Image 1 (cartoon, rainbow, N blue to C red):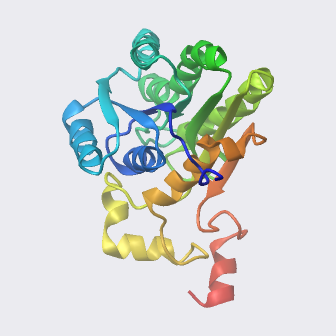
Image 2: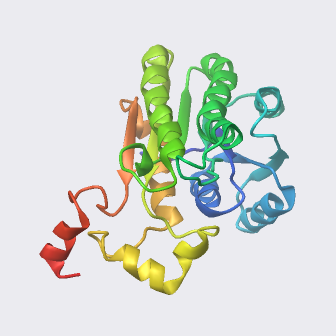
Length: 265
């Protein structure tokens, strides 16, 4: 009997920033597909609550703390997971963020933090994971990127630069690892409903934003997780060096005027 699609039985995965939001949705999808998932999170209480929820559903998830800004901490975490479970198949760098600032206000600390959280950490996580993936002849290195890599928003030029760097890293690493049975891919997230969006989550601001999304609404964390599940699967074995844009079509129109003209939004 043929195995169901996206069957991850026997696979071991690490998801950074997996305690809430997009990260938690990715953890759930991988665990539901049969993977043993390690939730790497700064705050263990949030991750442990998710692990208990999955355990109650018969899924396997464990939690580990890590410092996403420290290369040594990332490597130690990856090595410990691979030693504990005897293998490592999938890593997802989802932890990220941006201290927003206009170009005039941007300082060295904000730039360094943004690059470290989004770009540097994805590189160090991949570097630490590769030897373990080579040992089993299978690997999926995945990164949560953003449509900010290709479009602009005031106060986020440094974030756009970091995510564009992530996309370039995905392509370069995919090329280097193509003959090792390891694929490297990402998902470019558009506007996703999640905690921490501040004033953007206010009903009036959300309504204004959704007017300019062709599908008419923000996406869910699970929309990103489903794309990640595919890229983590055996079925995606011939896909590497790519980013899937999951944005409800928000990067399609040339301007917001095009949406208004089409739908009278």
